[in-house]
Image 1 (spheres, rainbow over the protein chains, first blue to last red):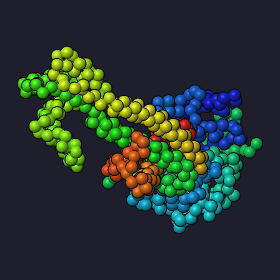
Image 2 (tube, one colour):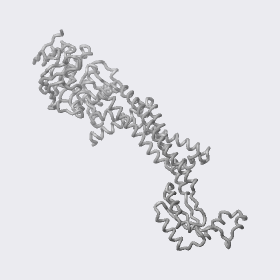
Image 3 (spheres, each protein chain N blue to C red):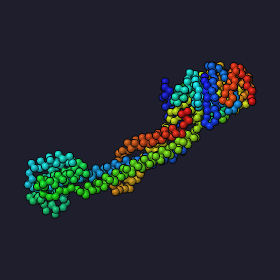
Length: 225
Length: 314
């Protein structure tokens, strides 16, 4: 939940201005808008990479206003994040990349060995455990990133342009995985420029332009402008 | 089942070792400079011990000898010793009778019949004496003042011996030791600072090389200690390796020095004693070096990561 949230960077105009947004648990929300509209800033506020200039943010009962710096890592472990550029470690295998998220959280090796194959199966990467990211297609790499994001069973998954670098076939593969995860009960926030995906999914669509929410429709449509 | 904290600490240490293996070539300069610093520290410890030994050795030979007239009675001698021992500047006072003095003389000149013939039991010219050990060589003057009193003078047959030249030598060594101690401390501080600056640079390069990995770790929710910890472990390893290298180099140097100089003395530095001290204290010296090396490594990487890993606090 965001309540009148603003974010202003130095010497620039406000990236976001008095944004209010309420997302229910298990919802699938698509956030659209042109480049520079403020979508990425919104996600950076949610992952606490940035602090808002004003306003209130509450995610999964955690009020960011009272969140101490030392508790930020714990917050991030509760939020899954997927990036347009995958952010995978190219010197680690698929298995190691996914296991990395659990190692950081202090999960035991036996539990990691038990969990990673299951999650790779969910995203359709069974058999690719020992491949390195550069040996995979874009869609497969993005699915590795999704596996890493969901392995800690977050309540919310933020996917920032996950299909931006993919061809239509692979883009749909990724979207299908996100829908599957949503079905399991994870709230999904997705940003995309892909008109076809938005219009086919028939989900809630929030449109941001120039730092403001200009529309919020339960079953939205999107037109590239 | 291990708890999360234990697993995390285990992984931090493991990652530190892995990073050390990856960056060992990058770290050569840091390890070398730390090795030089620890070698200077080692030499400072040994030089200090050797100088202290030399001073103690010389100090133990400083004494004041009061020669007594033949007519001084035993009760006067006893009272004199009691009075001397009651002085705070006197560590000990021992009496040597005329007969004991003669025995000592005969023993000293056993190979010189001419000198032995000059003195006999019936005609013993050697006076009885009281040998006074000062508690502090710098307070010799106080003892001198006491013995120069008229009440003392009447007991004395000859002028009292004060080991004055030895006192001057001790003063010179003491001031030289102080100088070397201060120079050693300044040298160690300078080299510690240089080592730390080189470690800063090494860590900065390591952080730069692993920037993507560190950013991903941060985004996935790695704690600050999980990100910084391996760097600290890595630089602590630099310190331990530098300590081992320094000890091996010093051990080789001492081995060469002792065989070529044959336990001789180089001015104030008694190489023989230094060599023995090094051999006898090798374990504790290595421990000190490792601890200091680890401390320098840990302190510099803590500062460096605090400075160069600012993004992890977001």
